[in-house]
Length: 140
Length: 308
Image (cartoon, rainbow over all chains, first blue to last red; front, top):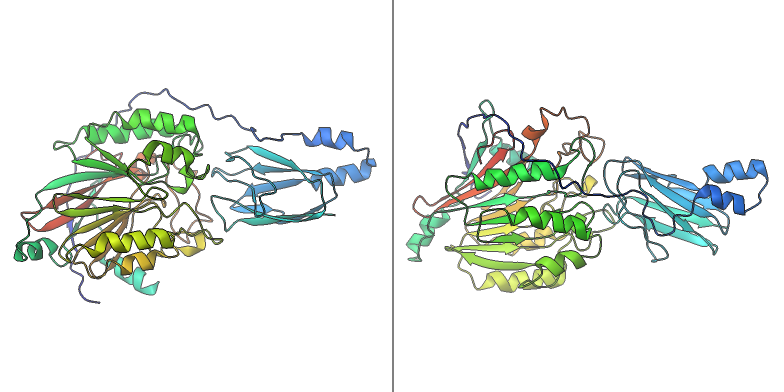
């Protein structure tokens, strides 16, 4: 190390009464503005799967975003399934396909994004804000 | 990384009551050297860094980030000596929406200052930087990088959020590094340099993506200078690193605090902050240069202090 003579000096500051400067201007930032917001229920109804299978398919159509993770990180669905991602976190996230097959708008807390997978294949995706967050949808 | 942590302790501040902390950045007395070089000494001036205003954020612990943004601006406007300019180091908006940029601009124009310099944060780049560049791209290069000289000090605004790595780190990219090399090669080593950018230029905590993959390349281009200060945001808390003649500093957000590296479960907002404590975790940074005393100082003030 060449040198390090950063000196630390303290200066006392006076605490003072807190003041608020107006409210107002709250942005309307509605949740659920995803492009293909096809509800899973509607989707399920459209596909006359057996009841038992439909129950499982419903649970298997969802990806939860929380704690900087996609859960499940890998989801296997059948062709024609609409997958819905829900952001359960106070941080914003996105769902971006690495091959540009799909791309969510920025997702605020409780926003949802849905995409229907029409062709078989493996679709890796990530969060544009936090690319260390990765997941994949396997369509069979 | 061990080196970084050890050296950071040199800058550990102690605070008196609710006092703000002043870090004096003497480096190798760059201004004294400047005088020896018979260059014009930089005169005294002040500027303010505001960062991570996250207009559009409305979750715990701050249901309306515009209110605290306004308080921060009131602090700037109440300064006894107005700053020469203000620097906004990114995450101006939460989701890159046009209406968020509009609301931010509406507040920013109420700052009583001649000029505001901008670099984007990753939250401003969700539309690949279109809105940001439309508003703040004039006179900049590439994704918004730029430089200017002020009273003998060379200022450089870098963009490290246009493309993140697969591990979440920021990048500058070769084009910007090439520009930076050209930008600084004409300067004398005695010229004080102040860089401002959004994500930490050093590897503060790569596990959370808190660093810039090619940041070291940028820093190495500035190693020959006697005094280099790098001002950053992104982490919503104060962190420091000193490396020789370089001082790297991150400022508080005006919107919400984030957890300390490794101590919190992740890099998101600290949700459970009592409302009477929130403002002690939000703030602004002021930097004073004194050409007379050959010194520079970084001063962090919280919204609770109100003593910017």
